[in-house]
Length: 140
Image 1: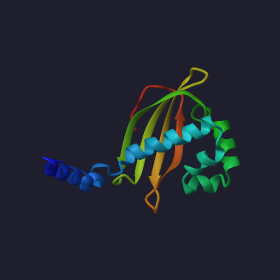
Image 2: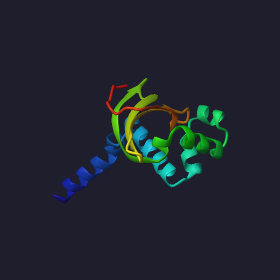
Image 3: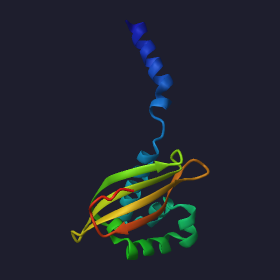
Image 4: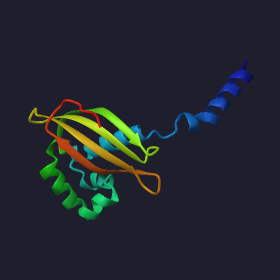
């Protein structure tokens, strides 16, 4: 019986990378959660680290990026509550669109559509966010 248990253990270990292969949607959701956490803790450096190169070209340092987010994306910067809505991965996961339903600290409801892109090194970065002042999911 021990030999069988050991064989099952070896089988599980051998195929664990396949079972836990990176899911672009889960990766996108994790990035969004981590960036929102950084915003909530006023951690500009960490929040900026999730930005794609195109965003960093527009905002070449963490302070200008953080100021832009505070001014234009208050519901994302300090959400009262949020939940993931619909998502779509295209081009074999090269681009992920993720809907985030947000209730702001002022109790207003928003929908944020994130675009997450796979980088040449295989990592994912946030390439943009569009905010809409409504709650009904219209899909992506």
